[in-house]
Image (tube, rainbow, N blue to C red; front, side):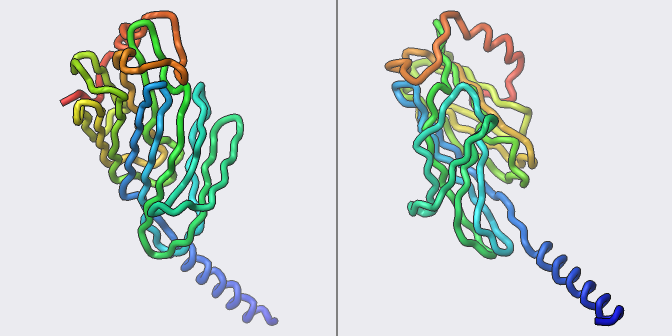
Length: 233
């Protein structure tokens, strides 16, 4: 191969590589997060994440940071059908990786799991403080929607406290007398969104899967939350 032909070959390779690279992309139009607090303080979580693919894709993953909580019963489905899933644990997070085939189309995947020891029960209140959207996503999210469901109906709205972090374009409110409903728009890549709520501890029948602290918690929580990003409407 002479030098001229070699140069043409390299140039053609670079053009083809660039064409392939720029033809493959994805966006995240919407995610729905549903958290059901059970009477024993465990939480059943369902995350429905919509991907819009340009080009071929075969897998995706979701990293859940490690903490005081434990995660079990992990499953990923598409339209109710189970997908091949790998669970990879390390000291920092649990990686949920699932496999599929997609090309130039939209798909919605549902990630189900159970949380234990994610709720803290104090002498006076119970608290859930959770990142409903993590900071590990490489793409922005157009809309996040979801709710946190209590095991019992709310008897007095003044007994429910809720805050959102950081300051984002969104809203939050009490829905159907037993859910905290939230909606957030335009979450940037690598940006988290979290919700903190304090509620009457007698909404739980037991503390089996909660962390208990023999101290009052409400005033400490309110002091830490010297402003609310969202307010109950």
